[in-house]
Length: 261
Image 1 (tube, rainbow, N blue to C red):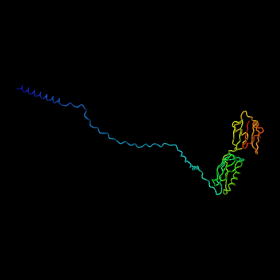
Image 2: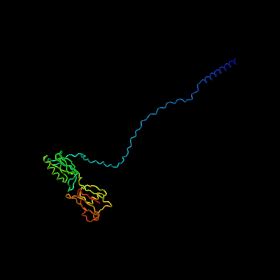
Image 3: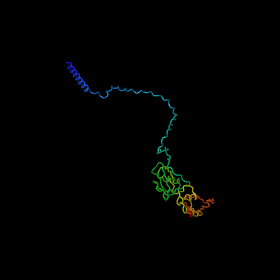
């Protein structure tokens, strides 16, 4: 009987052990993943601390000279000059001419300004024709060659008095083309040369570039017309260069011709 009870107890213990082993085998293995750690609180954003500006000692700057104040500029003059006030009965400023030699006489090809005060229709700029005449409104052909500008002015005023009441005339010389001398022969640059002032034979030869090497410098001739007759003056270049007989270095006149053989 005791044997039976011992056997039953052993069997019961065995059954309990089997059941316990099965339970242990069914228990899930613990996870290898680490348990989530508790959330750490997010860092609190601190507002940036504003540092008070550090006062820098002022840097000494070199004194700056004050900018110069530009002086007021005068107003630019107009390109068109206002006409000057003219008292009644007086002549206005006429267009300027050129300075003329004291012995100047009008000749062919000279250009003249003939101005009638307060009468533009009568005023004109003319060129002396080869016949010595100029053509003016109303007056037609007027002899000009051989007269001085003042003589021509007087003549025009007398002629215009028949058509214009109290004419006031001014004659200006704009260009002198009639006063010429001619240098020809054995010179570097033969041709006509304007005679604008006192000019001697030696000066005319210099204008022509000087005499050539093989020129007959002892027998240079100055040809001129005097009182309607041709005359000739001898000029010895070598004597004048040596300061001998300087009287032969005469002053030329319009129309003279210097011949270098």
